[in-house]
Length: 270
Image (cartoon, rainbow, N blue to C red; front, top):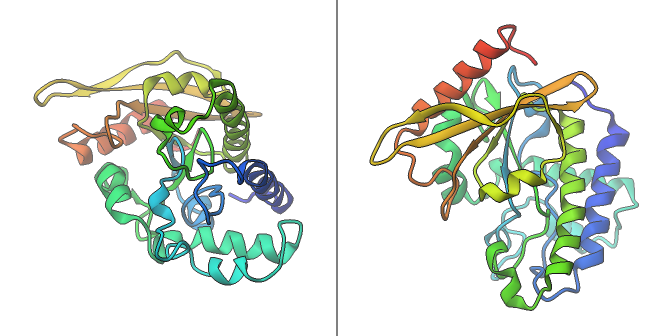
C-alpha cells in the first residue's frame, strides 16, 4: 500500500501545531515532541495485514529526565538545528526518528508486556522481523503528559480544557487512521474511550470470543468504515494499569483475533 506524501506531511504539521498550542501547559512533558505514531510506517504499509494498536497518550517515560531524546534517534540534533515544522527537512528528520523508534531505544518493557505476545499470535510485532509490522498510536493526544492521563485533573487542568485537548487529539488520530488504513485496530484502554472513535460502525460491538482463566477475558469487535470503501476490524479487550493486563493467554488471543479476521474477510483484506 502507498499513501500520499502530502497527506503524511500535513499530519505532521497538524500534530506539531497541536504541540505548539499546548507546550506551555504545565502538564506537557518538557522537553518532548509530539508522537504521531510509534514504529516503521514503511514496513507497516508493506505488511500483508496492517495492524494498529491504540493507547491514550504517550508515556512521560518516553522522555527520560537525564536524556530526554534518548529513545528517538536524531531528535537531539533536530532540536538544536533551528529548523521548524514548516521546513521540509524538519518533517523528514522527524519522521525518520519516529519510524526508527523500535530499532533504537524503545520503551520495551511497556510495549512488550502489553502487546508482544498478542501480536506474535497475529504473526506481527513492532520490530519489523515478522510477516506483519504493527505501529502504535494514541487516540486522546500525541503529547506526553506528567501526570499520566488518568491523573491530569490533579494538575489543575479543567474538564473543559481536557475536552479541547481530546477533541484535537482525536481528530489527529482519526486523520492518521484514515491515511494509513489499518486492517485490524487493536484497543485496550478504558472502555469509555471507545465512544471517541469517530468512524461509522457497520456492525455493533459484539463478543468475538472469551478466554477462560480465573475469570473470562472477553474480546469484542466491530467493523467500521474508515474512508471510502475501506473497512477495519476494531478489537477491544479491557485494560487495567496496562493494556490486556490480566489476560493469561495473549498468544492464543492473537491467533483467535487473526482467525476471526480471516474468517470474516476470507480474501485477507477488507
